[in-house]
Length: 154
Image (tube, rainbow, N blue to C red):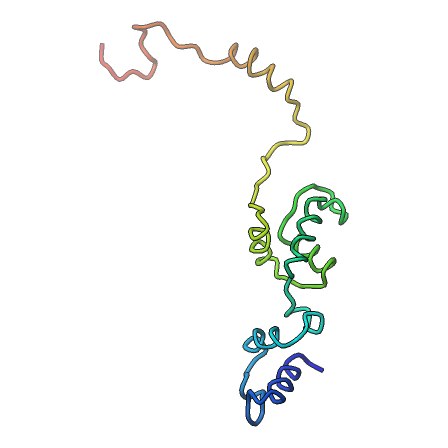
């Protein structure tokens, strides 16, 4: 049975609408709140289910285990990856653009990784900054010397 037909059947049975329930509720989105109050969570279609508080705690644990657990190569959680995790583990679908609301609710904040090359050698960088850079850096000219770009007439 289609989910909008399920809504219509429940509304008609409860006396909430006279005549055709489909006319009372022109689309499924309008009935989402009513349906979720009167239907056990497991009986709802996947697009109407939401994570429970217990699921949120379990999601937090899964997030702390890292995305490598799902087979991703980098240790970075993105909204599409979290949406995939929620769908896979809980059978609940969230749009990638709305997953950040769940993450904020769990106390996570958006982070941007620093743009550094994997081949970066910190020891060589320190050496270059202390030894090489001071040697090639332009020295300040002696006081009173004119600049080549001076506009003052002599």
